[in-house]
Length: 107
Image (tube, rainbow, N blue to C red; front, side):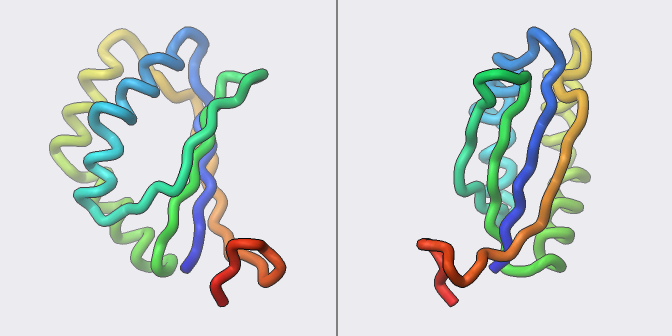
């Protein structure tokens, strides 16, 4: 398994919009494409959310994200949710392996 940390820098005043989009649409679309979200966090000092995903390998991750981005339902949801302006300013993505001394390491 590999893990991905995604950091979304949210435009001011758009935090509720990103939460609504994830809760009402994005998570179901991730599931549809076989993408497993592990957890979410909201930064208490900055306009950011963080979430982690688990992937079988890098190739699977890339194929699934590619299918997700091209999904007509995602395109529609993104366009509708951004009719009053973009929600996300910037996305950062980090692909990681769990280290052997992690309490969650499964070898």
